[in-house]
Length: 225
Image (cartoon, rainbow, N blue to C red; front, side, top):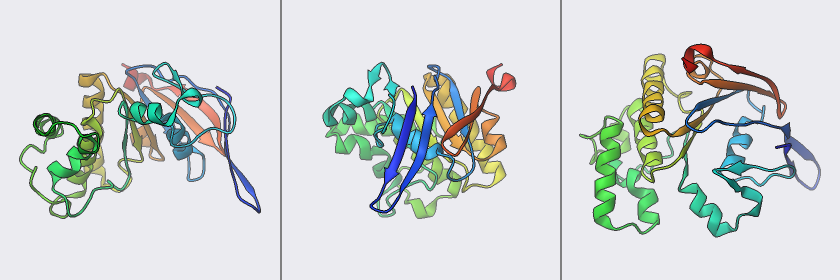
């Protein structure tokens, strides 16, 4: 509600978001479209509390992010996972180790970690690659690892930051199919930011951003159907 974010330095200030109002329906796929500098990534980072607004409020899963302590924000991020543009994998760690990282950091029991890693790798179609290193995988497979890592904590919201922009068209379709399946089978709310029309076409509702504002909002009837 009335969301604003301004980045300030000693010599200047840059407004990344201004007067943003939106509702994202639970269980939906919500698209955010815009060119570089439109404010898409900043908006995404306010949803998981990585950026604190300079104006307005963000309410996620019934919680006002402005009112949460650092500990509560960390707990929230277990329910709000990120999928990144460039995979963000550790090159020296196996697929299984990369996927398990959020649970390892949370000091989850080893047996539970092994079970969850097996489950999510099967979900993303990588059940035979647990011991591979990222360099042994294709770009599409590396993004599947990133999605598996995001799913390991059983999140309620999946934030996807340009998840297909480094991929070829065929692999893009495969990754989008996977994201749609995750949304439908696990009832996870998906927020996906992109500058690609074919990616936005998979979202049920889309907003177009420009200069930190919402310029247009529309329903994708084909995706909603």
